[in-house]
Image (cartoon, rainbow, N blue to C red):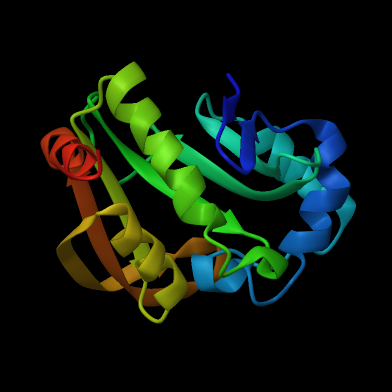
Length: 184
């Protein structure tokens, strides 16, 4: 499936994206704040495309005027998230390349995937989290309309061999519909 917004295309990852993924995912300001180490090689990025970015609802974020992947966004369905065990709930996960921070790309991509989750996949609730200190991710979730649910003081971050404070937010289909009505 491919989604188009005003400025973006959300499309499945391709092996040919490995070079651009490495370019952006090797930045030490991008991965660690989200819980994963910077990529060390194009081969590592290719492995991530093959084995991590292979979910049914995982998309490369691309600017409409180029095919280059500048980030990732995913609806993690039951069996691929630890936030829910329900089939009518999912987790929204995302990251964006540093050169594109602060331009509104992530809320734009997030709005489209949230619409897809509620309208096409018939989800009832979407969960979304961030680690303490990741204010950019918090700000995206606030712009999208997520509501605070809880925090946990000891969240394992296995890819970095750390324990962090994690914050969990959520959005229900009902709250999304009300928000959508308010914006029409």
